[in-house]
Length: 298
Image (cartoon, rainbow, N blue to C red; front, top):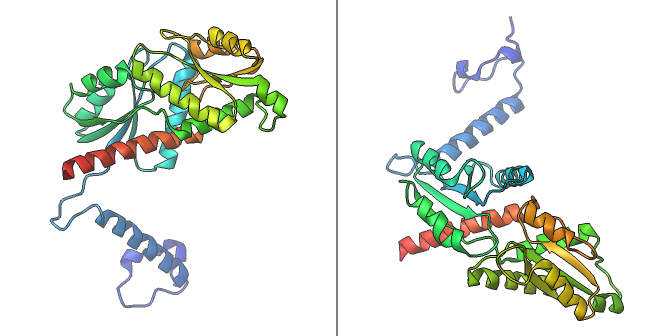
């Protein structure tokens, strides 16, 4: 009886002999191509001495943490976007406080799994105490070799996200000259006692002002000055009555909500899960890896 194509097992086929009747050559070639491709992919992981090459370091996204459940959901979705952009990369989440998993637990799990290297990317928008102290000190307590990437801001990809959120909220991309002279933006950020944090936020505000063609004034929901309401009043005193609030927060939460409530005109949503945010996380990861390679070479 002629063998059925659906029952044919190529492992039974002797090399050099033609395939049985009913087996399509195109199908056989396709299967062989797939096998060759998978074999080549695996061989690339094996150097000449026969040892398996290590994979890329794990990416650990370090979020601050929030009591607002929308924050955890937003960060989870953002990590899914990161995974979609870089299939095969181990992507983990760790929080500084308030949410699980805590960063210390995530790093302990990597240690237990015998993961050799990890790059920690702070889901923070400026330099400050968490980037300088909290994250490195937590990382130092485990055996996993870690390096801490730069915070997300300032960076043009953040400006791209802020611009998109403002347009979604009703910002007009085309204005008359009179409308432009009456318009401005308050960039509402969390605030920090670290002076470098204010420098970074101010740089983002300037980049956004260059993009919009109107003044952008940084303001803060806590710790630093001016507050968002004070910034709105200062702009109104300068004749800027069409004031929008740009939400310089990675996810929804109390600070983002209070800042939006102070908007006299429109209030943009937080940065959230915009694709540019996922690209920026990977950019900071790649930067940290490149810097490590350069340091080792030196």
